[in-house]
Length: 305
Ligand code: GLN
Image 1 (tube, rainbow, N blue to C red):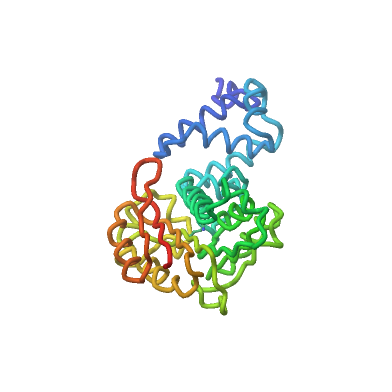
Image 2: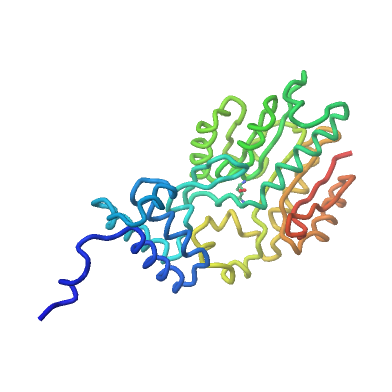
């Protein structure tokens, strides 16, 4: 009698493995099943996705199958793809990530655009923010809750004359941020500081404070997609109202800003009115809420008098 094992192919074919994994990931409720299967298989084989496609009908090299199964098991447990492969793109730059840091989100790129826009406008004579790099006086920027360092690195990358102080209360996050600062060759201009908001800031004052603070309401956290459970709670949890850290940040920012300086901060789509009020109460003038590309309120833009 012939057993199933006897008629099963002796080797694993790349395309067949990818298809089977896509089915399993899809059945587990993962919307990006096909993409994830391909990324993980390429990772297991140590190749990029283009090379994977070129090898579609070939046998997987020895050792890949076991590595792929291990990666697939992690993804089926809803561990984010970015933690499994250890990287995420932000502002077209490649960032190392681990479960010690929030995974950079595309909507956070809006903060970088807004900073470049307000600094260009503030400088008046300069046609665009990049020109500030050639200006005589250097900009002092601050990234509160830097996590992977994505905001601080992107700003230092865009503004060659800026110095960025990047604060985080997590020492483990600062280790990841340090690797990204090195990777993008901005270590001379990005200072990583272990600090709860401005606690360790001494008497520093900034031209702009930028932050993507935790702003999800505690009771909503468990109802969102399962991948969020893998990310650091302190990077997401904004307390009972979602506004705990936002309120502290808005209140503590004015004394940390030079006259005419800016606070640019990501917010939840339903927090625009509340955050606008907080900013007015803290004494900011020219307060506005900027929408993201989906049209949702996404960032506070507030200027100190
Ligand atoms: N500044 C980092 C980012 O956006 C981390 C933010 C956080 O941990 N809340 O993505």
